[in-house]
Amino acid sequence: MYVLSEADPSENHTLAVACKRVPHGVVCLLSALRFHGLTTQSPFEVWLAIDVKARKPRVDVPPLRIVRFSGRALTHGVEEVRVEGVPVRVTSPAKTVADCFKYRNKIGLDVALEALKDYRAQRRSLDELWRAAQACRVVSVIRPYLEALA
Image 1 (cartoon, helix red, strand yellow):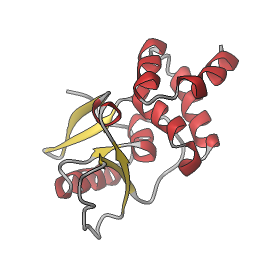
Image 2 (cartoon, one colour; image 1 turned 135 degrees about the vertical axis):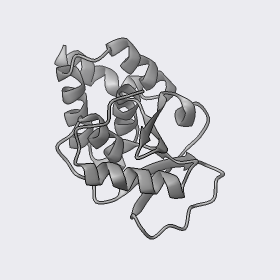
Image 3 (spheres, rainbow, N blue to C red; image 1 turned 120 degrees about the vertical axis):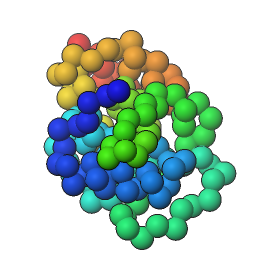
Image 4 (cartoon, helix red, strand yellow; image 1 turned 90 degrees about the horizontal axis):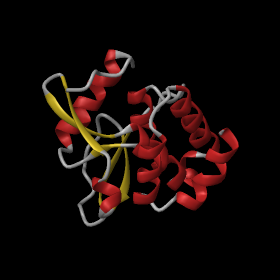
């Protein structure tokens, strides 16, 4: 069992509601960054990854931002935690950082760089980050930034 994030309890409640309404979704990108304490940003919508072939969920509350992952990118580095008794699937810190580089055009390169710096500041595993970068096919993108921080 994982410790819940230090985020505001209402944010954890929002994640629980979103995952209850979209059980096949995986909390990712900005929402996962916030959950793991890797950003100062507070997204106003819950970012969920679903399979490329899955139907888009029709949920009004909470507001959702749906991104589509496929294959290994959807399954690699997914952890399950319980929030208010609801199983919440969330990407691991390493997978979240790799996803940020993959979707840097959607969320912004500055957010991806902040996440990488915070990841390094928390002294998390670079091997795990490297495996996640391989799963997301962003090794060539993330390598120069890792070398610059080393």
